[in-house]
Image 1 (tube, rainbow, N blue to C red):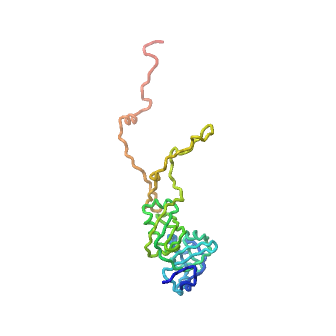
Image 2: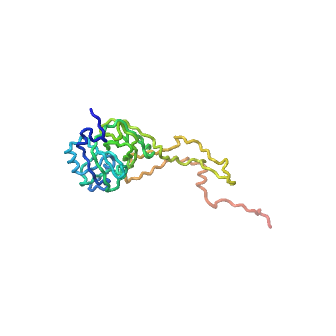
Image 3: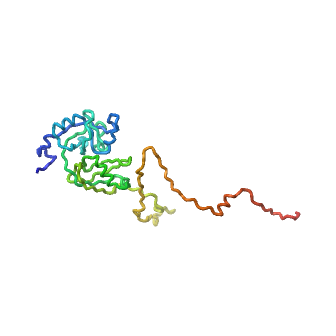
Length: 285
């Protein structure tokens, strides 16, 4: 049994066979080829050049292959897995959310180093928008999306795709370390409310402030009733939604029965009434 400390290179033999190189990084949308690679955007893995695989094979890097990405200009770092080795030499392709975390622009330099991470036992997430809580089962959606990730780093804001919509979640905490592997692990997950975002509570009647004609402020301060959580209405997503199709939903209303008054109104004919004369008949002026 031995301890592993990534800040002391003399401990263990992992650093003797460490893979470390620098690449120009681009988002997946810049990847040339006929195939759509939007799958890269749905997870936490990158695409590296074939030469990286040759070098990793010679170094006998342990599986799964995990990497630490560092932007030395901004001192930002994160961790990831690798999806394929098909990028052009000297280039790697990253998900857009990962480039945002690293504060990287298209063509920026990123340092890629192989690392060994502990297996995760616990993680805590904070949705960056209350829209994520509108999902019927957000925990199940998150667990399914994390299958496309190899590791998590505390402080990162990851992006998951669900029902043609992107949701961002901040990694608030990971155990047993600040960066953990989540490949084939039994991890407890926890979600926190997005308390740093104001929710749209809609119109509330008689909650504004008034003004007096004499300019005085006394006695015009509003005292709105406390908001009940049940007043906040959240929508239910349409899980059958398909691109290119628009669905109009109308509430059906039963027609009321016709009454006698309605029949009279329908049979009304204009200018069909009888007039009255002010002059009495049979009397000469």
